[in-house]
Image 1: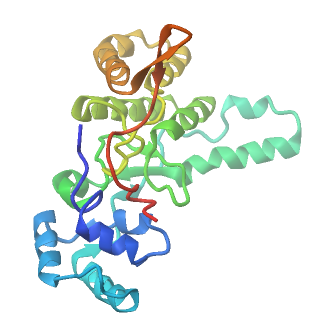
Image 2 (image 1 turned 180 degrees about the vertical axis):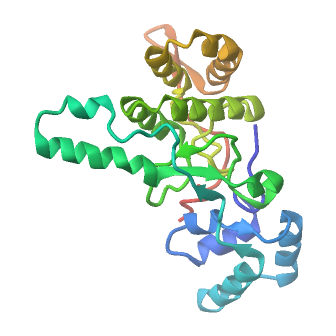
Length: 266
């Protein structure tokens, strides 16, 4: 399924901005929000009559002014404190070394810093953001990666369960169920330009959650969605390989799209 954007993923606009190195980090541009609907922004760029032959020293100020007029810093997230966070989860009491226990306590406190909730404005005007809207709050990796990611969320959730934060984990899993139902699968991350795949870890996430909660109803209610994601990967992310006269099915987590990665263009 192609849910990518003619602004954030492909086309003359992103090519002009990224190839002229307007930003040191290519991800900066594709994380900006639009001030206007995308068709208006593209029309404004057409009227700019930008020529790829313009030297960078001339092109960059033109593009900077265009971005200033048509984009704004992405404000998709608002801070969110997980309500199921507790001050002293049981695992801390099992750490005998005082220094290690202090380190683990500080680590446990990071959930406060990494919790995010997507603003409703993203849901209301989805085509003006590169962010993919999901209903439940998330835990992000942090740093440059200010959105949620598929692979990372598996490891994050393992840590959350150690911290006894099962409600946060359930919400994150339900976000991925939403993505499977709306997009057909869980992409690499929570942006429209992350349409490529990572190894499918949704089923292991659910397994970890079930092992912790023994919530069989959660499995029963969502088994169809889990099957749908499994079928997507088997049908779209595998290739047949012949070796020594035998045919094997090999997983390949790619996307059939030409061109550079929008967030790592150069």
